[in-house]
Amino acid sequence: MIAINDDDLTFTFPEIASQVRELFEKHVQSTLRNLLLPADRAELVKGLRASLRQRHATWELRSDDEDTYEAPIGTKPDGTRILSLGSPWDDPDEALMETAKSLTPADVEAAHRKVTEKNDCLKDNLATLTIGFQRTLRIPDDGTIYPLPAGLGSFPLRSVDDYADTVPETWTKRGGVVMPMYQSEALWLSFSSRYPFAVKIGSGKINAVSGEAWKSDLQGEPQDYVVVPEQPWLDGFSVGEGLIRQFVAMPLGSGFSVEEQLTGKADVGGMQFQVYPMRAESYFREEIADSIPSTLEELLPQLFAKHLVPVQQHRCYAKAKCMGLGAGGRMRQEIYEDPYEFDVWDRSQAKRCFVHLCNSMDWRQITGTNPPHPPLTAEEYKKAGIPWFDYYRDDQKPLKGSKRLAGVKSVAQLGKKTKSPLFPDDTPATPELIIQYGNTRRPEEIREFLDTP
Image (cartoon, rainbow, N blue to C red; front, side, top):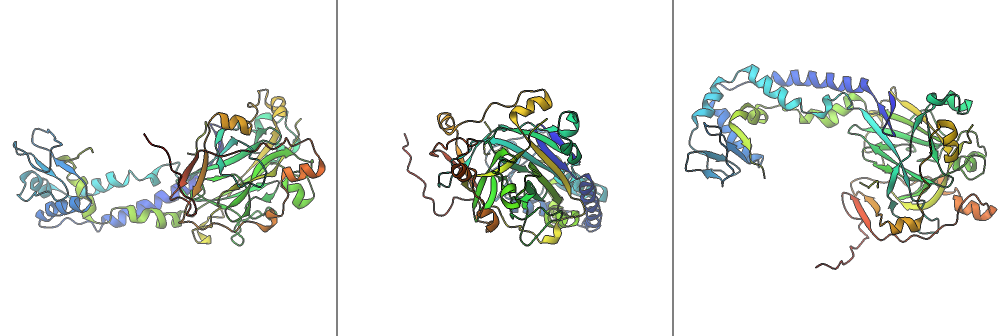
């Protein structure tokens, strides 16, 4: 199912969620057969002590009157014992032994269910991908490699089928959604999912990752997709290792789009998305199987839960003419290699959606509503104190980038060559506040000294 939710595009695969749950249930049943209670129930109490110490978890033992405490480890004057790592909890406890003796296989199954039911894999919306379309600053194409500008709010999305009388006939044939963009406005894409997906992104039937003509199937060599959730954002066309050229909207037929440069035609425009979920079997094996309790020891805190209580100790977002995407200024952004084996992707369940781009002025004619406010200039961005962003991970390998896309001329280069009035002058920008994302700082960067009180 494909839907619009709060101006985001969502792709949901309920069949995948059902398959994962079925695998989950089979695994749980096979695991339960091995969780046998010992004849000597004192082993359970001994195992509980060891388990809590090993997990470095701090717990309190409830007293008979259900009072709990957060005092230092040991035994309180009223006799209440405190459990914790290294706690001298050596004398036998009648309450725990009584519970241990009364435990049955049904109790074990109930404890197992309570633990495993918390797993996110049981949610019906498990296999759901959200793609957001963020308005942003159009960075200058002045030879500088910029960090990532912030999101300035979502572009509105509407279903083409809701406006069949006001959109071009070719749009109704392709279906999908329509989105307004001002001429020369920039955007970036955000991806969000707990489940792994391979996502193909096209611009006018040119693949934004590989630079090749759009193909209906997933391609591993060269990789023509991004992997989510490993790839949180995409701001433009992949033109080199760790380098992209920003997505910038231009009128289709003006000669500025990447599509027109690489095909010589202005036939398609817009953006295309094709989404492939990971196979349920692969996901279960990679992400879930090891998290399901398989030993009695892992269930002990739940089996003795009535006696124990734990001690309590961004990238920000501040009759129509078709639009295409041209290549804007250069930006530092890695597109990562697929960390999985290629055959984990379920190519039998792909979902596709066409995002038609229209001029913001035409948006009013199509929908009867006003377009968003014009985009910010570099000067307005700076005055507002909006930060920039850098995303870097040293545990993911970046793609080399597309040689074909690297040869594409930017909108600014074409504008200077043709002296076209379609593209406004570039205003230099000086990124000052740069917020780091990822798992580490780029190795070549030195953090600046900051005055402190």
